[in-house]
Image (cartoon, rainbow, N blue to C red; front, side, top):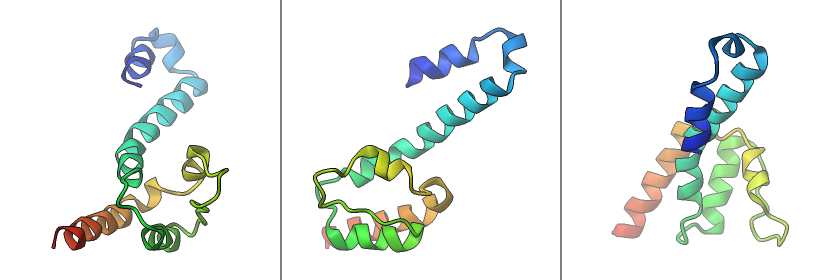
Length: 99
């Protein structure tokens, strides 16, 4: 991911004026910002009730018990739009588990 980020930044200035460059840059930036949330969601302590809370926050259904549940299903949800609320849920989860 880091390599792609730096390659994108090193493109010639003329290309940076293209809409395709802006779209690629935004996609890379959004994914980079989403990665910490994805790492937290991969935590083995995540239980169905945590997914239900995140589902309520995002308004997106996560069928985590399905064998067809994929990263793509997470990326379809508005995670960045709800990033702060999701992070609060992770903080609560860690706090409760540590007690």
